[in-house]
Length: 215
Image (cartoon, rainbow, N blue to C red; front, side, top):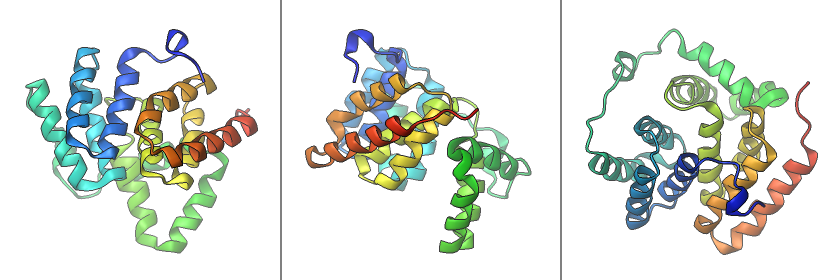
């Protein structure tokens, strides 16, 4: 993994990743410190807002609300929302957006994913596609590659290896380089429990060694 002098990630992206990891870890002082570091690094406010919204998918309401309160207080700016954000009815574009984004993330495994999740419960498949990938992960304000970096950070901290495996590949599908994912994991390392870090590294080595970009 690269040292800091050769880090391929710009500083705002690195602070975005560490903030994502801190939110997943859920320790309020750590989140507060990482909010301050993100602001000091010049991370765009829109990135922070989008990270908070997508964190709902990974860490749930309690940790997201705590982080959102710390973020909003620190930036000193009111949140704004598009009309679509304020209505829960399925927006006509969400399904199409969700299908497109999910296909990018999962590549050749997209149809298998849909079948597997549908077998667990049809509602989970619909919610994943419409709410997860369509309504949330396809929003403007943060590009898909950086969104996947944040998901990598949070799934690593939460010790969910199946989801981590999918989103390590998802980041590569979204245009990340191997070196960029290496650098993301360097940033995440301090937030991952010691006994879980070996598994994260081994999982990434498997993905990296078997990676073949789509033609």
